[in-house]
Amino acid sequence: MARMGHDSTQAALIYQHATTEADRAIARALHDAVRADQKKAKKTTGGGKEKGGKKGKKRSADRDEASGDQG
Image (tube, rainbow, N blue to C red; front, side, top):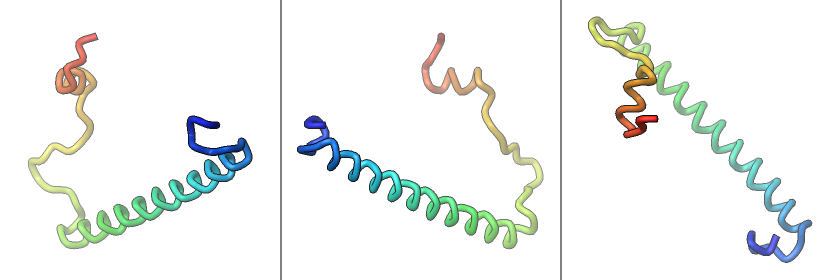
């Protein structure tokens, strides 16, 4: 626990628990903000799907090339 900067295991566990809750709250707020923005964008563009545009995930081979990973 000394590496974390706490004097006791009890203090480290309290801090860890508090930061976990804060991380969840931040993640939830970001999730809600993104969802609201997506809904707003869908309304303004008339459904969200545009003609001719490819939206989706890159194939794994393309992703590996982009990251420089060859293995």
